[in-house]
Length: 112
Length: 448
Image (cartoon, rainbow over all chains, first blue to last red; front, side, top):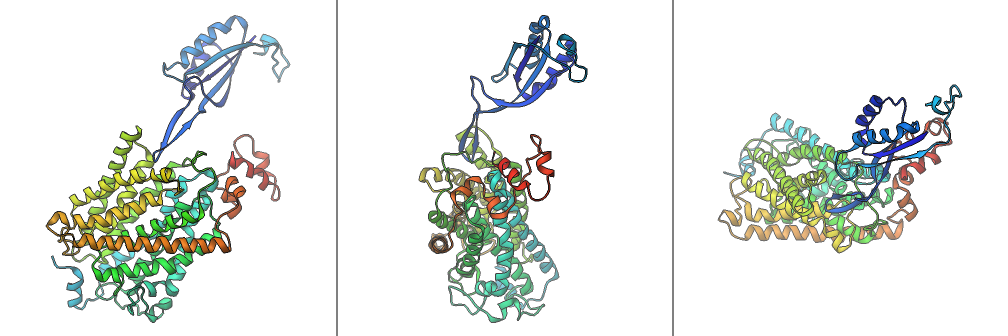
């Protein structure tokens, strides 16, 4: 199993959710996050006083998938999240040792 | 056009129901400006001192109202004038005034005039508070208001508007309070901040406005209330001067907003919300002294000049290193000086008075008078306010402790916080656990 994590622009959430549903993903976790990448944050101006806002709002989406679906799912997320402008975010995957459905105690792929 | 005062005085005026009703509405409009100012300022501070900012304006409604009735109206508008201040014993406690007794030369009762002018006396000290955001003890501020209106505002109002006041007699034009209200408050703000110093973290920590929608709400309500402030200042509606003032108020404010936004777009790259709100207020300030003497085109010029100069002026605090938190000096002092001096250029001689400015075939006489008005009030208010602040600072202390300032003045001074953030991040338990516990828990979250 793999855990796919995507840190992306908040306004892309709906597109990503729809794309994941179309792909057949049953569940996901969404968290509000903040951070910056290579482009850093942005500058705001209040009566001429400039403030650099380093940490910009993002959302973090986490999905558990089976190994063979991981690559394809990453592509789906990247496609749905992309706007082509700076700050579109990142997607990565890590191996997962085990997963348990709390209600039934099912383990591994059955728990997804 | 003959000035209304002479016409009315000659005809032995009678009470006008229309003018009286109009002035009661104008008084209520001007009253609204103080809570509007509270929102304008309240949105510009950080979350942790929102309530204190609102209260610094709101308390003026309490303190000044009482002092005005006790002796303020008598000092400002008493007719036994000593040129620097007035006195009329029947005005003490507003006790010797008949309900149908008219304000001399006008068609409205003395009571109506007294209550209209009261609203000006209330908002003027409230204007000062923006410069002192985040760092002043509430009791010290309350005492400052009481002393300041007594020693500075009431006498200066007499200088500018009172029968026998020395600037009034000289012929200084201050239609609705550019000198008595805005220069007075702006200079006082400068005087006090030179005594009390900067906020902790000034120029180092970010001090972004916490709610620009509140700022916009406040600015919008100020603009609305300002029609009472300005159009009401002719004390009636018999000759159209108030209507000219109404038009000029609108166009100057519009021009100032556009000028501020244009400057900011060129200088900083964006049309900001705070810039629009600030530009509008700068225009309102500048047209206050001048709008009764100029034409609508003149008002557009005055507004645009004020918008531009105030937008440039607000940056000066970073250059000079004084911490005028919400730019009371940059907007009210600069805007008031600009508007008052421009009377000397833009007065047409055909609206409020026959005095003509330089651009309308006049000479420099009116400009010189305006300058005397501007700089005498500026100097008196600056020095007297600094001395008052110094006395309060040496006795009871003007500022809260550094720790309290950093953790947030709302809690230490008012035992409240503006917003409940406990809902975010599972605060259910901290919210519902009874009476004794929650204070400490909720405290921490507000600073985050």
